[in-house]
Length: 108
Image (cartoon, rainbow, N blue to C red; front, side):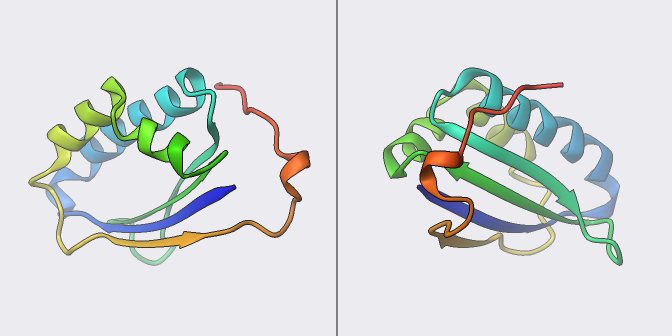
């Protein structure tokens, strides 16, 4: 498994459009990518302009495939000028649930 914890700080005037674009990428990731097992989008309770992502992929190759998908490229190009600070990315290896327990999510 390959997981990411991402912290994104966005300019307040772009928050709504950023969220809209981010959700398009998240939905496309879980809907269209067999290797994407989780893509959570969260907002900081004390700072609505700070967005967190928790992404889980079968492996690093699945994540690399994610970065070539149309929905990712569309998101990347749309939001590139809306950041208020550099994005912070932490790569992780999930411990629980165990690898065998991960299932493909459905998109609401």
